[in-house]
Image (cartoon, rainbow, N blue to C red; front, top):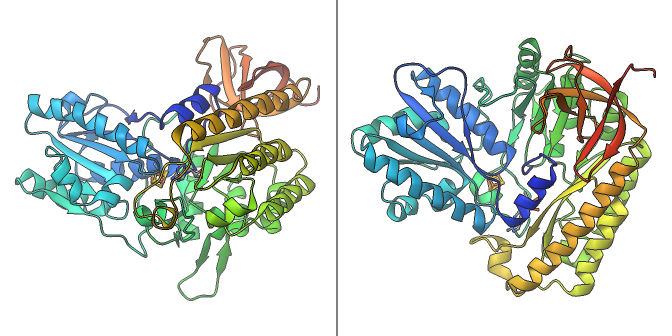
Length: 477
Ligand code: 5AD
Ligand code: SF4
């Protein structure tokens, strides 16, 4: 569920620090009140910022990429590791300076850190005016108006029902091709290392019809790929109010895939304990459901997995990976890994390395364990692996994954992939970039006739550990 862009820069960046925030804007700037929003953390946060933008637009706000010209500065925060919160505090220093220059500007902290720290954030960050948790975004207009009257506004109420199903997100900073659709919120899993159940509340699934309608609307508007988002998509479960109709994740996937064969469908994140063969068969049966599964293992050792409260062991995980490769032979699998969890021995760390190799991940998001206040692990276990050891283990994991990603990519040389074009390559405007079904970045020279949102077939000629490079061919070449 974390940042999903498989570039080497990103992998390095995630190891070294949390994902950089992005200032997100839409369309042209208008007169009237303006908001500036930066988002950090997972895709769900970026998706939430689009919901907030929609709520603000209804209030007459337009977005700006210039914080010093805005009436409202929002920062959508992440709490998953200590470093993520540290980065947010650094950004707040910058916003403070803007506010000193332009005293009317309001500063709002939203997202997971707002939820975790609640009123405490106002005590710690004197220039913050608004603190709003992930389930309280509808209340933003009221919070803004009390802040305008000089009162601090706080709403961190966590809901059992809120899914923002009726709010049509404003696609901020969009390339017009890929879009997120949030299908559920919250998490009931209680992994012992994780702060998410405390910051995002109980799991709830969004109305299936509103999801399909959003996908159809995006397709109409020219989008060609949707990413269905949830902390644990495999436990998606929605029933119609009369209870007649039950929709699980497999059938939701199918409904979205049926919007159009030209609309690619991706999803994230899958939990190894919940991913079913039924889902795997849907991926196999629909060409437009991408052959890519993000299936975080966290650790390759059964004792550590038990301490993490992941509710599966090494054998269970391996069986699920075998099922994926059996049912969808060319499926790519990626993972999340934590090194140096409480009491992890060198042998247990070796089990993680051997799992990475065995599973053949195309990429992984890799992290050193960071104790989070209030989590089960913080309460029950000592954070006893020193930072140096955590980091050394992390670098072993990173190097192995880089090597394996490269080897995986080398095996793609000579193959032809259907690629959805996302835009011009960063390095050269004579090249386009896009992704194949396996979520690999593919770069190729343009002949000038191809545009964003087109599908092309590309034969791969050379690779790095992060990118495939090739040339356009006709489909049956
Ligand atoms: N320390 C380090 N990594 C963490 N993650 C979640 N909580 C922590 C933590 N306390 C990682 C997990 C998860 C990903 C989103 O972030 O690997 O899958
Ligand atoms: Fe997303 Fe988790 Fe970070 Fe919240 S704490 S922003 S849910 S990654």
